[in-house]
Image 1: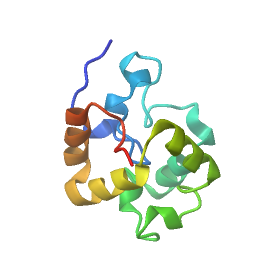
Image 2: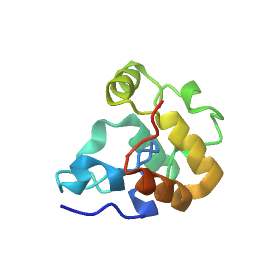
Image 3: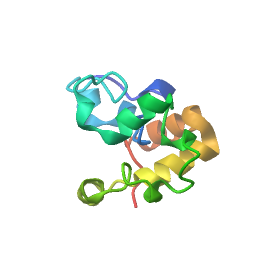
Image 4: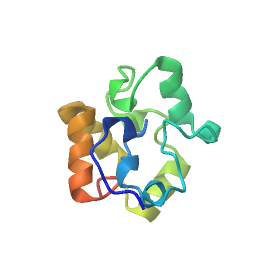
Length: 115
């Protein structure tokens, strides 16, 4: 099993830190940026289309919850079930940058900030 490390390239487009995700650490998922099968993810597709490293770079929506691709029924259900706050992750990226967010999440040992 992989160790949790600080790697800004492991910050998912939606703000989740893949570097602390159990599936990534058990080598069952390549992480958001390398997951070619995640064509279903509208956030990933949007960020790739616009050349963003994450939603934190989007200037169209100051609040990620205003974006229907980011904040929809499925994401709310998954966020509730996994106790995950991607919105807080996006704000942390805006405040600390990708490296700072990756470091904070690696220190917490979690892929996301809890609500």
